[in-house]
Length: 110
Image 1 (cartoon, rainbow, N blue to C red):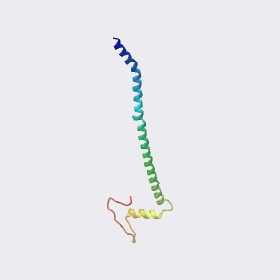
Image 2 (cartoon, rainbow, N blue to C red):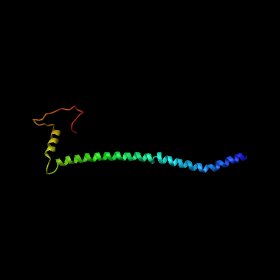
Image 3 (spheres, one colour):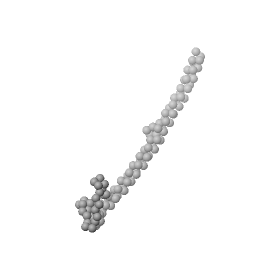
Image 4 (cartoon, helix red, strand yellow):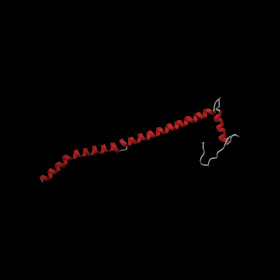
């Protein structure tokens, strides 16, 4: 019986440190691989970087469109932009201009 008691005592003495070691391992693993861990943080930072790049492109496109609209509004109309827009919408060309047709899916301008 003394051998069984010695084993029980050793198991009981080792149980608390093993439990704390398992808990530490669990939290260490989740701090690296979990939903809020370091790897998830890097993925989210990459997503933010891509979103900021897309935002920059959208802002640049919006600014270009605003410049075009300002050229067609106001007291002083930009004659070149007005001429370009009218030709595109009305499908007109000048007498001395050369017309190169494009295939239906490949328009030069939007």
